Amino acid sequence: MFQITESAFTDPAMFQGGVLDDGPAWMPLGTLGHSRPLVYDTKNGSWISVLRARGAGTIQRHRHSAPVTAWTMDGAWGYREHDWVARAGAFVYEPAGHIHTLYIADDPGHMLAVFHVFGPLIYLNDDNTPADYEDVFVRMDRYAAYCRTAGLGEDWVRSLLR
Ligand SMILES: [Fe+2]
Image (tube, rainbow, N blue to C red):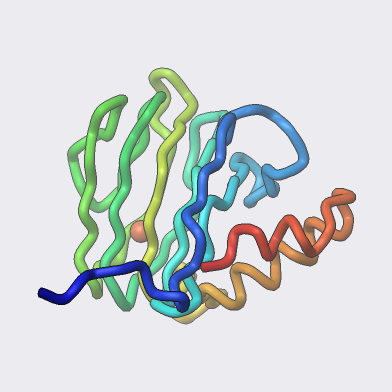
C-alpha cells in the first residue's frame, strides 16, 4: 500500500488573525475605500482581499477577464447594473466578462466584503475605453509601493505571497 505524504514543494499554510483590525496594512483605494490584502496567489493569477469602504457613492466601473467571488460581512454594496444589494451574509459570484460599477449603498453608507479576484481586472471609463489595468502582479507591486510609504517592509508583502 502506498502512502500519501505532504510534498516538500507545498507552501506552508497561512494563518492571519485580526485581519479586520485597523492599521497600516489597509491600503487606501480611491476616495472611499481601503483594501487589506490576504493572499497574492501568483501561481493562479488571483488575489484575495478585504474591501472596506465608508461613504455612499460609486467606486469604479470595471470588467473582469475571469470570475470573482465576494462574501459580504457588513454594510451594503452593489453594482449599478443590477437591482440586488449585498448585505451581511450575501454571496456574489461574478462570471468572467461582466462589466459592472461598484457602489456603496446609502443605507448604511459603508461596506465590508472579502473579494477573491481571478485574472485581470480592467477599469473602464464611461465610454468603455480602458482607464486602468490590474492583475495579481500589478496589484502586488502597487501594494508593495504603498507599504514602503507606510513603513511596512517587503517581508510583510512577501508573507502574503503563495
Ligand atoms: Fe467586479
